[in-house]
Image (tube, rainbow, N blue to C red; front, side, top):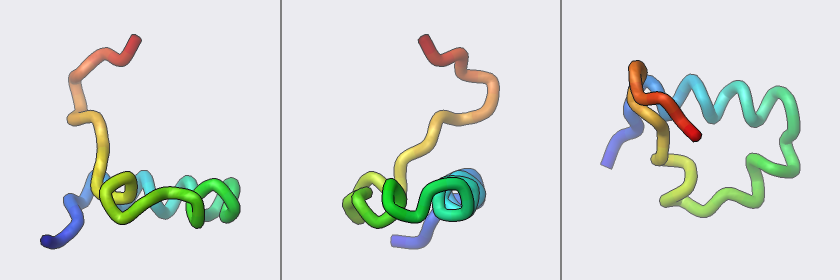
Length: 41
């Protein structure tokens, strides 16, 4: 299963800002993202 471009961009930001947090994400966690236009709470 390939990464969505949104998930890839988010992973790059997380890795750049805090590599330890990125390394803690599971494989599933690295594939998750909120689609643009969805308001998060």
